[in-house]
Image 1 (cartoon, rainbow, N blue to C red):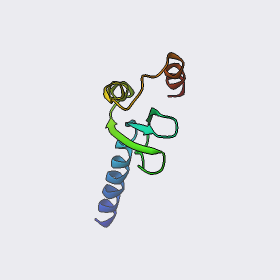
Image 2: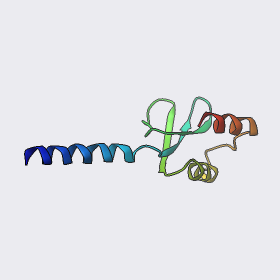
Image 3: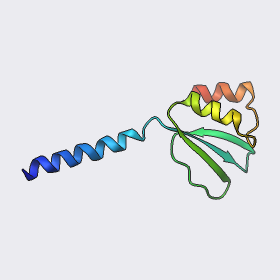
Image 4: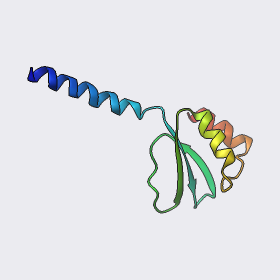
Length: 86
C-alpha cells in the first residue's frame, strides 16, 4: 500500500511540473527598452521591470505584447530572429 501511495505521489509531482512547460511570459527589459517573450517565470529585479503572463502559446504572448503600452513594436528583423529562436 505504501508503494502505491508513493508511486501516485511521484506521478502527481511529475505531472504538475510538466504543466509549466510550454508557457510564455512577456517581460520588459529596462536596459534595452524592449519587451521579450520568455519561457520561464521572470524574476522582477534589476533591468527586468515587469512581467506579464503566463500565456499558453507564443501567439497569445505576442498578442499580449502588442497591447502593452510600454512595449515598442518589434522590427521585422527582431520578429524573424524571435521566431527562429523559439
